Image (cartoon, rainbow, N blue to C red):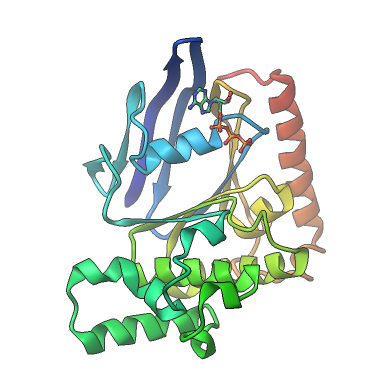
Amino acid sequence: MADTLLRVEHLRKVYESSTGSVEAIGDIDFEMRRGELICIVGPSGCGKTTLLKCISGLLKPTSGSVTLDGKAVTGPPPNMALVFQEYGRSLYPWLTVRGNVELPLRHKKLPKAEMRRIVDDALVAVGLDHADTKYPWQLSGGMQQRVAIARAVAYQPEVLIMDEPFAAVDAQTRADLEDLVRKLHLERGMSILFVTHDIDESVYLGERVVVLSKSPTWVQEDLVIDLSSERDQITTRALPRFTELRTHVYEQIQRAKLGDAVRR
Ligand SMILES: Nc1ncnc2c1ncn2[C@@H]1O[C@H](COP(=O)(O)OP(=O)(O)OP(=O)(O)O)[C@@H](O)[C@H]1O
């Protein structure tokens, strides 16, 4: 694939323990181009977190490989950022918003003015430029998740991995954060791999939706989302094509749950 950023090849993961072994990932293969926004969906417990842990170098696969920007992933890659569902646990309560966003940049030893410029830019990008001196516990859940996203933006990773990032916020905040992700992708060309349980969210956000089978998982479908890149919560979700796509993904997940999809 031209300009491949991330390549997952024949990835398999079996958890071994004293009580036996669990094959979480059967055989996963997919590629992501630079600048793409891909959503991953699948039935509950199918192996999404295991897959992300292998991609982010936190877990060693049993076999197969992950390659980022041409380099084999054998530990957490420096050019990757992660945003998780538990924003409360990913922010340091004793640091201000600015301090939290700055933290991963500190080892880059940037001149002070450059660091300030990058952090200011990231805070503006997520709409938190007015809140830089606040502490996480003074912010709403949605604002805290914006801080986590600003930290990832400031770090300027090659790829941003998001694991169910909006599962713990209310519906209105979730819609705003989805639009923030679309904006970062469109305006900054960020490459984003986004795992979600929410079928509508996957179709609204993604340029592709990768549907995983039930565990031990494999890629049941890799669907191109042929909606315009300019999306908005009201008109896009009201399009007949949006409804067709979400119905299709829904049916695929039902098949995945039943385990009746046949691997070609
Ligand atoms: N450390 C572990 N040891 C043994 N089995 C595990 C371990 N972690 C996960 N599993 C098993 O691997 C399978 C996939 O789990 P995983 O958490 O990756 O799925 P998931 O799709 O992220 O789940 P959810 O939809 O609940 O977020 C499940 O059967 C789970 O019980």
